[in-house]
Image 1: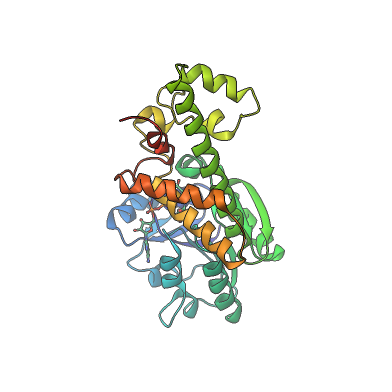
Image 2: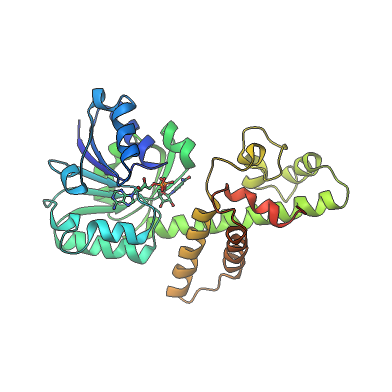
Length: 300
Ligand code: NAD
């Protein structure tokens, strides 16, 4: 049994923390939002060893492992760095698993501050969404040393099914932004093709099946069809609710552009995808699932 501090109990963090409790670990959680904290205790957490802390500093008392699942780079840097930051309070040899999706450069900054203090850190962003978080089937893309990953693996296995070592510090975040840029591009291409076919008189379901079995087949068509009613149990068939919010996809596409900028890479598809997602956000649809880009190609 490991004593774990979990900072950020939102849509992803709370179910991940509950899976750690289920596996028999002690979890002391903190979130700025009181209701998330109450949920950690209410969802059987208290009985199983889930404690709600009043601050991040309180949550890390006695923790062998610290996990964070926060919205973006500024939250992560704010939590760990600077005078009052957690890295200045944690004992050496603590294991920090930073699971938020943030800029690779930002992750490297936290890694370097952790190294200076003898703290072991991994960037370990995830894929698999809220369903993967609840089911304990997330994919972890890990950046950092092989030895650190060996130490972290039993903890990560309580929350995920596939654990990949992407490379050195920051590599997990690079893998994550590459994956999400590709996801945005094939979702947009799928939505555009479906709208083209339907405007020319085809049935969206029939066209989806043809393309799925042909060379246009891709994950968005197979698992996450953006046309309402073609697939059961996907956000498109539930008013684009649930799933992965368009504003988070827009954030990730911005991170991909930053990563491209830092090495002068040419990413025209990623750049166009970001512009299209921003259009969706300007229409007030940022809270909808990212497959709602279908609406950019259809008449209201
Ligand atoms: P969320 O907004 O639901 O949760 C983030 C939580 O962090 C919130 O509850 C917020 O109150 C808390 N928080 C912010 N600053 C804090 C601080 N200083 N101390 C303590 N708590 C703080 O977001 P989410 O959907 O859980 O996503 C978390 C991260 O995971 C993001 O980086 C996101 O891009 C990534 N991600 C999300 C999904 C998804 O499907 N939602 C999938 C993969 C990756």
